[in-house]
Length: 341
Image (cartoon, rainbow, N blue to C red; front, side):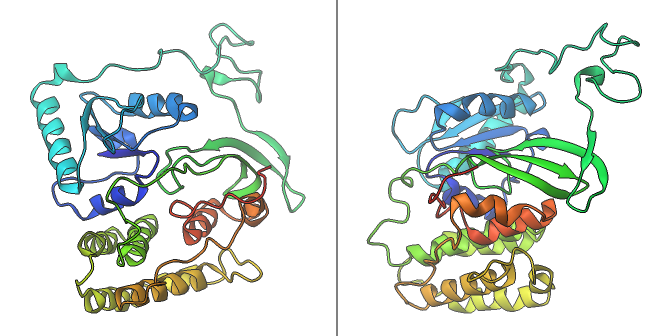
């Protein structure tokens, strides 16, 4: 199953990582079922259609809504908790694999990304050794990098449904090698109220549960999916009166043996906000405090403004940039101050 996440649904989707009945994959090309969670804003509908069309046949769609009418609902709609969604996804998978003719059709026209047939000296869109759009795909052309070298430049748009990024976030980047030379933030993460009955204002366990959801996603991005499932399982059990301090501390001890903190040292350093390793430590401390009954546990600000993100990310490798973004927890607490560039 692949997930396209809309307003208010990022947290509940992270708890699906604990479910043995389904596997949440990072790319729609590896999925049979697309889960559309929450309401998707109008500016992201075409991107949602493209994600849908990337699923190979046979495929099915399940929309997890908060109970309100939504123009972004595709396929079968389901309301309720994680268990209800798992049941709906498993049933959709069974139905479409049993009857492939029920596979959902494409939502976008099947057209070439660029006109290339009969173009250029060889009729394949190229312009000799370099340039043009060979077979419809633009070539990477050389340009000066930050060190004064001439390297190929790759221009990409990332988001709004790229698994490691906050849902709705769209940024245009220029890569040379794996280094981000330029970053332009086009759209911020999707805001919106959480699902009804999810992390209510009177729920004293809400900060810790929010932190555990962040941890489940962050561990997944770091490639520690078994530990991500453990964090998601704790998030699903996080309720007032449930003592999760011992299993959380056991998970934290386990993470020390993975070498994760060592790999985060020095990544995404910001004056006054430390590096990714320090932000992880602070978040884990906050989760621990929240589980132990501290009412402010788990509530940690993003520590970076939206407008400042390009300066933070430029010059990092793509891997370090993703690690830095995850350490800010922008999905749960979007950084909306300042203007993107």
